[in-house]
Length: 268
Ligand SMILES: Nc1nc2c(ncn2[C@@H]2O[C@H](COP(=O)(O)OP(=O)(O)OP(=O)(O)O)[C@@H](O)[C@H]2O)c(=O)[nH]1
Ligand SMILES: [Mg+2]
Image (cartoon, rainbow, N blue to C red):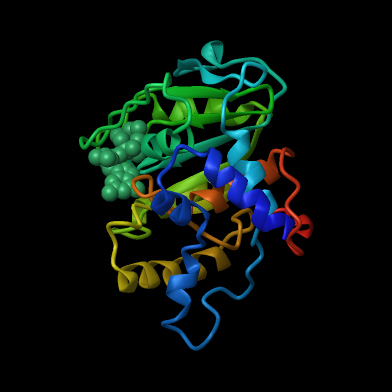
């Protein structure tokens, strides 16, 4: 009862259309589950309750006491901000949808102009965005086609800092996990940084394509130590799945207390 009234009061307050709101709070796994007789994932570790979903969305709504905005950008440590905030960083092949995801996350901050492009290799520097004094999100240049020459040193310097609590490795939902992503995954494993996979552009991929890619990721997880068991699925266009990702970010940065049973016992 409390959950439903929380949700409905937030939906009233939200500037999104009701269709976008519905997709925002939906778990994209639900629609894929119907195609399989066995569980799609071995364990549904992360399933936030409605209160956590609402609290996480509120975290990304700016107020005078909780300003959200761009801090700085750079290609080396001298330009990286010095602060105590936990950071989460978005990495992935060029064109995977990193900047678009940041733009979707910051949909309630109209003053923030995040550049995206059809052309791969658009983002050239690490861009830092603060969410009040609670956490910081970092948009990285893409790897692969039109990767900037300083990409490797940038990543190396970035991971020397202690702020990063989670790296999201973005995989284009139409293309799935490719050889170049395997290299990136191995690099993250070698840095021993906790990471999680985010499948993007799910509005553009058919259910059968998504299912194939999720099942492929299930096997990839088996070869890793630091990868979170459950890939996230999102669309930056329709906002589908965004609520779950934000709840996870809220949780791992210590800002949203997600009362889902297993998450607290899992480090990766
Ligand atoms: N339909 C749809 N298009 C998307 C989505 N996410 C990104 N795109 C499109 O994909 C293209 C690349 O998006 P970006 O966000 O710029 O990709 P990026 O990973 O930041 O790319 P680089 O900065 O070049 O590494 C753009 O044309 C976006 O509009 C999505 O969820 N759905
Ligand atoms: Mg970009």
